[in-house]
Length: 146
Length: 392
Image (cartoon, rainbow over all chains, first blue to last red; front, side):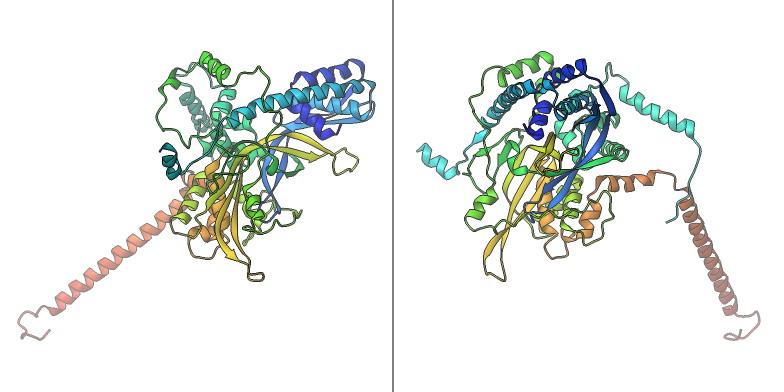
């Protein structure tokens, strides 16, 4: 699984999953904190529809953290001031980078969480879809009423 | 203008600061919860984050609490805070075309693929005070959520709907110029570099995206009222969550290796303006205006699309003057400059006093001289006693 997809599930899904995965690692391995969670900025780029050139839209507050498991680094970063989750992301990342045996079972858990996330998103989208309208001109509306 | 520092009053300043807290808290039984400010003042939070140029809903709520609800003060606090943080990454280009839509309308086309989705909007509601909100409590909130958005039950939708951009439909019909190839030029960053006019398009867009909503709305309004020439229709207005990601700093260099950071709510507007003929090809196409801001701030996104277009038109109206628009839309700069008049200007004023006293003295001296001359004249014109008339 690509890291983009994995981090998306861990950040947007239930916080219980990164907690569980990180705990599995922390119980069995020595995890050294290389850089404790701290706030910083990410400058975001967007693309102008007219010129098709990028421009800077805004800065985003993020929390980032780096850990190491026996010399293999792991890095966690996410939007907002969320030190605990940044730390857990870093631990999970280090475990994947070091290819720890525990990670073999994780893909199934991640895919299940992704399905739950999709369900939540679809439920929210249904609320949005309920506001779909079809506008008639007054002329059409009168014709229909006749 | 020269500035002179002043000193003193430390204790009074500390007491004044405490007095703010006193007026903020007196007659309050409990402090405002940041979570409630963030959620229930969401449009204000969006405005403050956009004008601060910092997407951080929790801290925008904190800034609003600290600034007693004054958006200008909250923007100041957030800008000051952001200046203390390191910027370690630049994101990948955020793809707004695939954003998770919560609202999408077009005032140009009724029937568009994906449909008109009103989403959260006050546009069609009666502006009547809802007195029920006076007693809204936790139970009311729970009852509403259970009825409107039950957490249980599988969704009927099986996949998230895609919303094709209206501009693409116009392109299909040859009414918009063909899509340009994407360029990955490095944008200008107005937060780190001094803007020299004429500004590049990326600098203009960044400044507009950080602009103050009221000022931008007023300038866009002036253009539509005739002080300028831009009065568009809205091809598309979309509000939704766009994904933010960065290249994996510890990745093996694979351009596909990226890390997801979260979602950012944005409002994007593409306007359709008058058409123009390409001199080389003779083709006639509509001209598009573009606005993109953070949060749900539709007025500002529309104003941005009008202003960026207006700056590309020729004329003498304020909304067509790049320097006028770009140097006056930043809320922190304008409120800061007007506000600084409250701070000690004793030396400046002392110099004004000296000048007015000098001017007054000179005027009085001149008056006295004139009166003296007048008296002399009168005396000279009075006939001398015993002299013949006409002989002085």
